[in-house]
Length: 177
Ligand code: IMP
Ligand code: MG
Image (cartoon, rainbow, N blue to C red):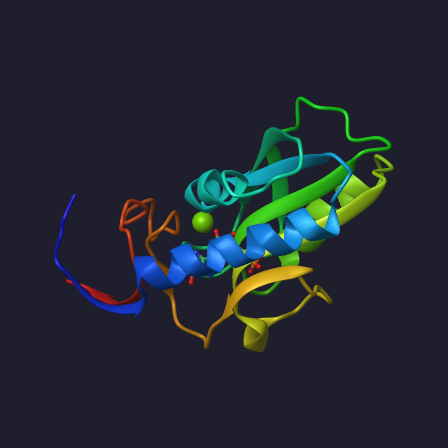
């Protein structure tokens, strides 16, 4: 695993921490008196979800989905397949889908269409990052941490070629040497 890269911090761990707390407060307020099934999309959302749910004050159940996309490592093709489905039934339940980043929106659109067929009570989307300039599907997250320009970013769960997920900051990946 080469560690030669050119990185620039876009969002520091402190900025992220503050924003995650804010998002959790908004979610807890909106679902006050209700329960939530929080669905993390693997692998990118695992760190964000772990931090987010610790600040949510309404009762939660946690579940995960894993999707494969047939695109290259930096481009999504929109052709998606379920690798791991939910273990929880979401019929009649409030569902919060947690994503790391919405780029073209094709992956999320596919997930939302599948989950809606299972008749959740409310289905809401929470993404840490949003790159709206590249959108191809009509997708607007209900909760969004940061809107960012069209950079390829890594860290805090986000990867390039399955690397750099463990970085505490979110960094712009400029090149791999
Ligand atoms: P979409 O279908 O184009 O919205 O792609 C969403 C998925 O592509 C995300 O869940 C990420 O796994 C990946 N992705 C998109 N942009 C980035 C990025 O800047 N860094 C890391 N992964 C990204
Ligand atoms: Mg990814």
